[in-house]
Length: 502
Image 1 (tube, rainbow, N blue to C red):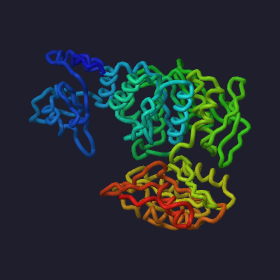
Image 2: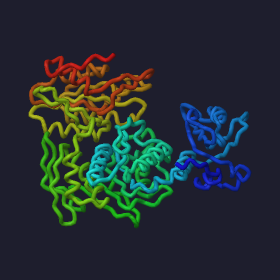
Image 3: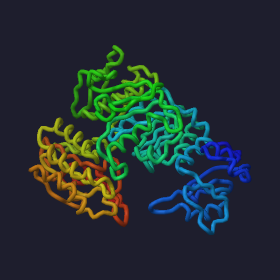
Image 4: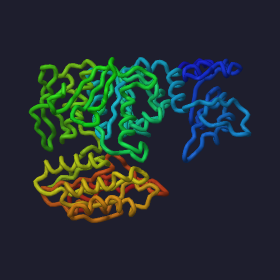
């Protein structure tokens, strides 16, 4: 952002607000915007968002005391507020459009957005590797972490607020970046966090049941995803990379100006995988595109990762990168943290940690485990609290139908009673006759699963993946499935136990 302040009227116009209604204040110089009153500086505008937990209006006076020149809000001003209060019809859209005005250099970035229920993170990592392999300085925004020109930062949200995105992308531009790849969640699309961003390439991996606590219906969930391909106060993407084998994705109707690349295994796919081979060492296949056959090798394994690899390959093509260069970048990309990640301490059975927290993702992970094992599949999983309850019995049924042994445990119960969550999952699990047990303590549950394992088995620790915390009702604890698994294996005589935490 320029160090020079701009007139308030410019921000109002950028957000499609009637600047003439604020003629008296329109010439007021504004040097920045914020939605956190603690970060407000002299000359800033402050967004007072309404919320279930905290109402931003309560912090308006604090923002004013820190030097804010205007307050933007969807709700009326408090009766005792004496500053400039400007109503906006949709706060987050206004925040995004004002951010676009302040950080105008972001328009020079080539953006790739990935949406879908499963596979966003892996696909994001792969596309970033392809872009870097082609010589670009890149940024990456997603569930696990953010990257800015090679610097890694801890992720706060899968898709941050628009202002944070624009700040991050502006920094990327100032550090010589040209391309950014980001996961775009359905919440972000519905709430307006990416409003006004122009995506050059948009990817849709798949759609299965999730987040119905927010979207209510699958149609509502799908409609939110489709916003990425229509453009939100921005032109539609130049390219849409779409899963030809997914029923929901097949319903997407790209804009007339958008070129679609349909990927998959079926004959209708324009980018198709042939001669597929997979084992625990990875995937091998030929990518067929416009009559060209390109051998692809990856350390990732499983049918679901085949689709992630095809999606990334399609995005690379959309960016004009040669197929052989795409394949070389894929071959150099290591496994993604917490996505079917092996924990190897020399034991005669496999232990795998995976982020799967929907029934479809859990089925995919168990099927890969089944294909790799010479013995049984032992699945430990839980369901998150304060989230879509309808998917819990579906996850229980998926685990029961495909596993030999199931251990139900806690996974971020948040404000809910863990027993209530487990009872919801048991409804589906008990539709099968699979042997199962319940252990609320996740650390002990991991030890039960690993203690059950015999040579040739696969132990799948599902739900957390890369996460290193457990969210309880009154606190958040450090907890990492990978660390716990290594310690449990050490207790069985494999590898070494971790150092005790201070």
